[in-house]
Length: 129
Image 1 (cartoon, rainbow, N blue to C red):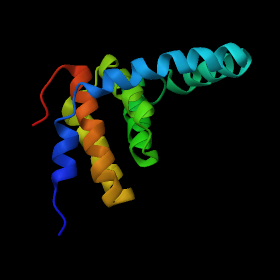
Image 2 (image 1 turned 90 degrees about the vertical axis):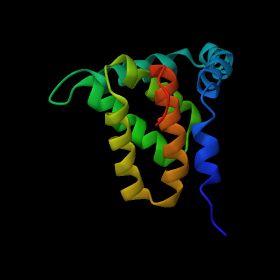
Image 3 (image 1 turned 90 degrees about the horizontal axis):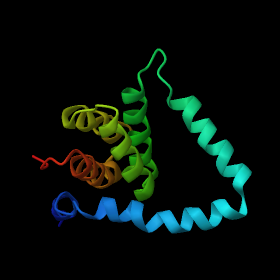
Image 4 (image 1 turned 180 degrees about the vertical axis):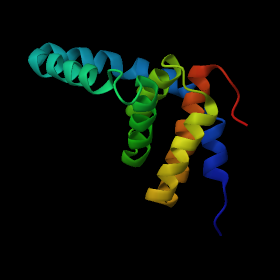
């Protein structure tokens, strides 16, 4: 029988998203040391893609968060949840962006989406409702 236990577990898993970023940092440093030009260009690409334009950085970070949900990438979710908070996104805006992933990606997005919402709330220092 299907239950919503996985979703509820994901929602109570708040402190883990800071830890995801902390765990990835030394790994990124080691790889960046080996391929610095790739990382430099990746950072430049991110800067170009996320710069305010017709869409604000906030909207672009919410799009990136939604894509991270569909990709099931915990590091991407944590990174873009944090960036969306810093760009001024609200929990409601994050929830609605995640809602679109559920429309387009179905059941798996309910799991990764719940985790993404918990990550957003962790970085926003709010409690998921």
